[in-house]
Length: 165
Image (cartoon, rainbow, N blue to C red; front, side, top):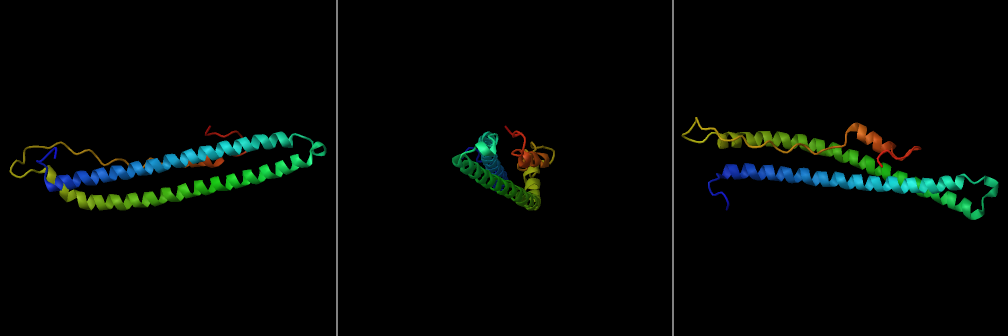
């Protein structure tokens, strides 16, 4: 053990803080994966739209049967990708709300549990005039995509160029 002078309460407090930090990091990893998936879907949609636009530019009377089939195929692929992306965005919003609720519950739990421990750790017995350094605050809640960020993400594959890329 690096520090053998730590009291069990201090160890418990430190472990709780480390566990909370771990949860924040796992959430951030999840958010980054979502963003990577979203960007990839946007790129795929934009590529398909570009190909579709070149097919649509050909006058209807000049199109071959193969071109018409490809046009229909592209429309179906774009539709599926847009549905997949909508599901991804909706899932991310549900996850964000669930995590927000978890954060409230965890904050209440920590407030109740750590307050007595924090007081024990801060007031050493027999030396009331000594002050220990204040422990660092708990890590901030999961960084989230702001409401405007979600709106941008939802709109990024619309009729204009993707705003994320």
